[in-house]
Length: 604
Image (cartoon, rainbow, N blue to C red; front, side, top):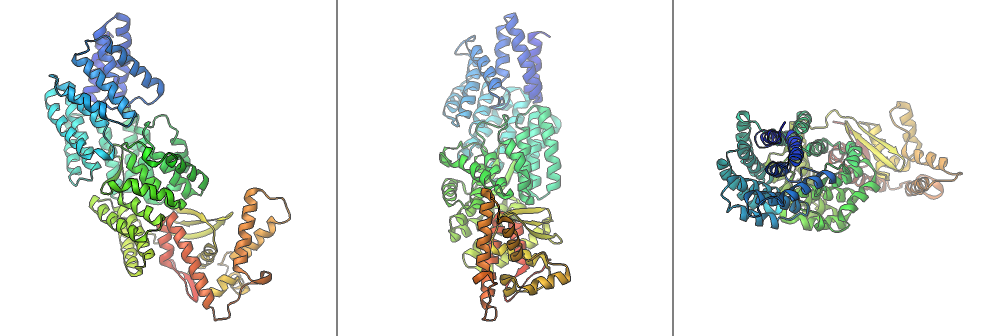
């Protein structure tokens, strides 16, 4: 093929079909052929076309440098005041601004492009500038740019320009939580049926995954996410893998299965296909690691994000989701300092939905992480205010799983603030909403098992690994005896009466106190590793707290009143720990465990 025919094929693939993969290949071939033939015009056009549709399409250092150097070379071959020179400078400037997390230079060039006679120059300038203002600070500016681009695209004569302009408008409406966003999306879908554009169709498919998650249609959303990733790979979109990972994170988060993603995220955070201004996967890793029990990895990921201050992180299209993950991780780790910092920096954006990239995932209202942060640094009244608003905003978004999640945390905040009656009403509403979404826990089996110094609590497919405590030991006994009442004094003392009764009915696991003593005995008399030493000291402390002088079980001469108080406090602490790790499991335990003189676990 001649340089001209290769250039024509690349231009058609990019501007008309949105086929990023084919256009990159053809433009590269056209550039090399033109360079051999000394065809300056074709070489310049091929260098410009290689930039693609989006900003920062080329992620590896080698690819990005090759494209940049060719565009810079092309600039030396054209008249500095020509339209083609302006287009080349716009591409270079947009790439530079995007990676530096700024937009001043590209917006300045946009003003220059508005004076050009060629509408193609104006359309390209508007699209590139729009891509550089995707952070939460520029909601209104983006809308103005998209509206202007729609008008200019009607003059450019390139069908793909209008589709791109309409796509930017759809994205803007979703990022702003606009109630008319779905209406705009429907209009774009209908246009794609008549004029296909692979790159735009991929983004639309990803947005549809987000909508399925907001509806609570998780199985369908997972199928759609897989199909969308395949479409993105076909289009040659470098974000296909990252978007699929983000969507899977959202699905697993609302399913209560985030911990399962720990190995995937631990690998994905280092992928060279991720944007240089995207830190959202580090915050997701911190959350997944904390939920899976790897506290050190979680603390490391959170420290990476906070070490220079959260304000130093780029306010990119994934910034809000990153901040939400920081709030979640700080809450799970009990990091009050990080919680205060994220609360302060996120507060100006409280009204916005937590969306990533081009609206491909949504984690609900920004009020939710603000409420979590307030709970973490101990301001229950402030948490109540934020979480009440989060419930309202998530309902307005039509994000039913997020509304359910916020309502659960709202109930927890109410309880901490002392409004126990309203907290119970909210939990009752949670149960009704969960059942309506098919997210209820009826029929799911609860289990509590010790793993080293920690406890694995599972409810159906959900699982949380939490720090140990005497309250968890009490829960283990109660859960192993569903429907049976056990005296509070026996739970604390670990008397033979409970053990004998359990053996007779073959339903109770070995009583927690005896398990501790057996494990402690196994650790004695040999050289211990650091981890075993910590376990030894922890077990000794728990046994000392539960037993009296000489290791005898503590007795309660006041008819069990002291036992009732001790068990109640310990179980409430355990439930609070569980709720932080997994709100669904925590609420299930809170709803179905009863404490008092007689304690029990009654499954639904």
